[in-house]
Length: 604
Ligand code: ATP
Ligand code: MG
Image 1 (cartoon, rainbow, N blue to C red):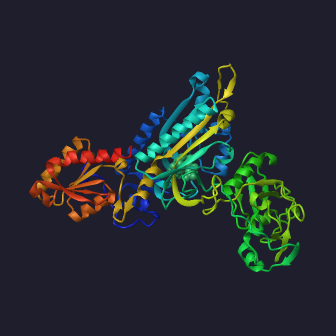
Image 2 (cartoon, rainbow, N blue to C red; image 1 turned 90 degrees about the vertical axis):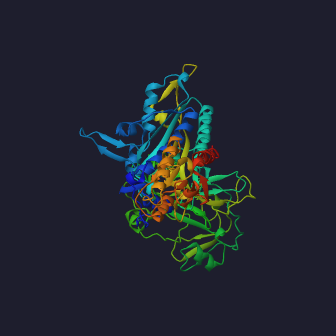
Image 3 (cartoon, protein in one colour; image 1 turned 45 degrees about the vertical axis):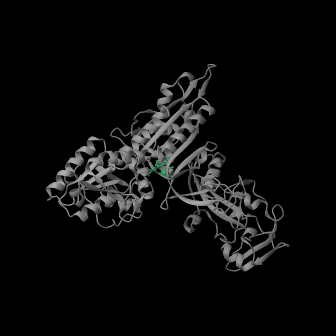
């Protein structure tokens, strides 16, 4: 491709609405254009990158036995009602674009395809002889994200490879899952990315294994906790650890103390000269279930620990049936306005005890009349602890479970693991923290969808059984941007060779010099002919502008037909290292061929 003929516009300055380097660079270098919130046009250079990533994904999926297909993006609401996810996706998370067609039928734009694929399996798979099956597609997904941001990282329209497997038993599912783990590792390695696979939250479906593939980068939205020995890595949402030991309480006889102005743990510790590990803090949450019921939740947890909202939400989802509900729609710490809707009188916030009276809750329709009391494991074994006295400005000291307070029936792990905590598999290892960009997620779904939608098969004994399922996603467009986030410098993008839009760019410093032009044209033709994807910068611009643009767009090798041509040579610069060398014109094609081959194969 000749730059003089390409729709190629670079920006000198950082666009105002871009926050992270990769987003700025892709905009500046003319790879993408914003069309609307979370909606981008992939311009020709970007499209080439996306196709390269897709091709690597395709090769690895095919190698693992995947069959490529293409499922509809327009999906009837009925399928989502069958699986029970219509309300969750349109109301609770509100992440699905839903619409009505001219016949007044509800439709949605696919955020994911479990429902569609399960409907297909239900129709087509009858016998154990037809499984296992692994289908995948590479396609645009739609999600009405609350906070679209960072360009392609969190779009409302983005490209995903999603795959679904159907298996007869756990063993077969486990094998497909491991195959996908290998395929994903290969995809990321071949794309030239530094990554880590980590244990991930499986949501309330629970039990099933799930792993995320994280590209390590400061701008990542996820926090990963891992140990140096390589034995443990998990998303902070899922991570478990040993909490620090609690200090022995300094208080020995139970009493109520005046503790003015101590509504935070820090102030309380200062005032009472005690450790936060001696405190039971009681945190109030409000949850809304899908059947319209509001439940007030009181979590008792050790003072030095924080509640992990994801773990809490999973516990609440498990408890949903108790309230005649299926799932949690919302979980939040109620603000004054929310409290006003159900509280009889102002709560003693900052001084709440584990036994705060249910009388605070007005009798209102759809509000459960009692607090749902949960205790985190860290608070269960505390002796002589400090906690609120249910009265502003007062705490009690030397309290004990089953003496002054009844231990809540439900003791659960809902604490947030933190860097520095000791690891469970080996307490000598401490958890370290890293930031990551989630580019892939593999998941054992089990029978959740097949049971809900009636996707069964007949086993060897002639019995009808639900199919086991797995799902496996890669954010193709997110991965491409993550590569930039991991590889750039002050001058621009540094693409890994395997996913660069072009391998090489031939730059003509002065297009009025016929010899420069002639040699460049010849090399341009020879390189492309040899399969080296090459751009020709034949624009009528100053050499400096051309060099800057070549750096900005990040093409791995730049070939300059400058002064060296007098000696039958050209200058070849590697973008990554900035190493520059003069190479005989006749050797350019073979040299580049070898470098590109080496660079792509070193990642194989
Ligand atoms: P996240 O937690 O980042 O929202 P997710 O758990 O919703 O991701 P999945 O539903 O597992 O993601 O989708 C599979 C993959 O699709 C993700 O691993 C990610 O790479 C990509 N992806 C998800 N949402 C977006 C988005 N809004 N924009 C770009 N890529 C996305
Ligand atoms: Mg999401």
